[in-house]
Length: 638
Image (tube, rainbow, N blue to C red; front, side, top):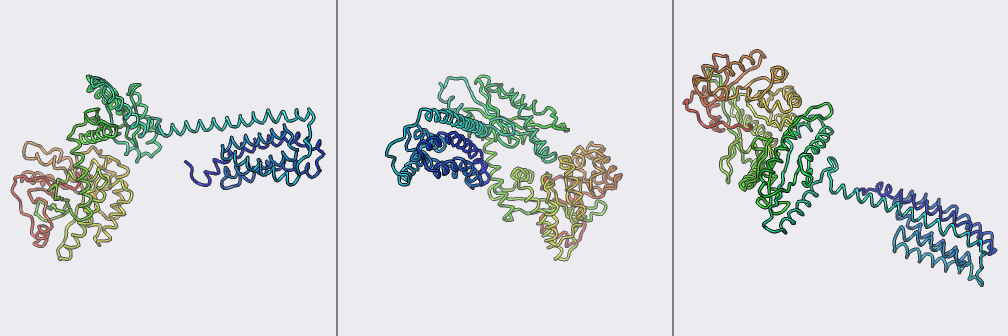
């Protein structure tokens, strides 16, 4: 809805033009019989001249003045009141000739009623009465009413017939436009403007109406109502990489596919963003089958390749399903439980569906409370860092430290990093968490330097979501600058799978980090599907062999994948480090390949700040620890 002055003037322009047309027709058609009447009355020349001038000039002057006004509609209403005043004066001027007086006053009364209703009609009537009194005071009361000749009555006939028709036609046009505008506004309020599907408000209202009808029916009825809450997997990546125009076209095509999956009596709606809702009505006996069949149909429809412009895109969908009355008895409750089930489907690996279960709400509430406490922990310093040494396996010399975040909550106790990092990503806290880890590690390095001990390189894990932020490099540079840490002392670890999500963006960000002097390592290498060509273009310094390719060495695993990774790193001139080294057999195998750097329980578990400080102060090489594996290291980012 327009609310600006320009919007007001835009709405009033058409109104003013229509009134101008009506006024011009009325004045031009009424002028000849009025002049004829005045001539028969032997009116003075100045009266004839003034009537002629006003009737010819006033319609144009009123239109120009109203068109330029800040509030043209209000100004035009004032013009109509002046018309009524002029009509009253004309009635006196023509000495209250019956036909002329009726036509003139009726003409202006119709204008006022059609445009402004009773309020403007009464204002015009009052203006006409004032004009009559003024005219009588100036011109006097006629002693005898001039009886017009019959042909004068015929002269008024076109005005009496044509003018109401013009007014009726104009009123009809305005009414038709108002009806059409009302229809469009109602459609916009009920429909999604992009896809044409029902919108969020409409689906909620329609669902509530269905539920109310179902609750009024006999308990023995077999009709049940189900809600499918659908979220498109991978849509954000498409939107970010290819732009909003491609994203919008993709949503339109997906909406058509979803509509094709539903029956005629089912509701398909766009709930917002890349979320859709389908409301299905089915029999109690076939409820599971219908819900599953519809969910399967949606998954199949969404997973088919879709052409948008010059791009062939592949998406998936996560679907949550809830049903009345088991999972909710009102629209808000059913939509909420379906939404909870949808997130459960995402946690299962995406591109699947999940039926709502009561425990899901408990888990969702726990995640919500956990995210709130995590935000507070980040802001209040409730987190702390451990550091796992990275060593030269030939000598046991300390070569680096990987910073790993830990969190002990008063209510939840010790929380696994994999759990609260997932919550941070869902709640939009992962960037704040990553920045806190870098800042805390840098502040700790400053403290160690003040102790006069040499500090090795610090490795920091970076989330894929952080790489999507355009300001991440600037933010990291600011943290390093604020703490006075040399960028060469910091290495960022990025998982191989993260690089594959948005390779162009990831390569651009990593190149910016390297230009800033920060080292780059690919973490969990071998777990993704990057090609040799992609690897050659990545701006990285080191490859970290994932623990999955190390743990089986010496226990029946030939170590072929680890051998291939080390060979590949040498070919590309990259450094290599192995993680998860826990046995002497693994150590000897890796050294034989030429991989000399490693981290793992064979050398050290993650250490708290005090233990690392003692290690740095002693300057000793790390002793080998017992070969029995301990608990997992738990990175900040999985």
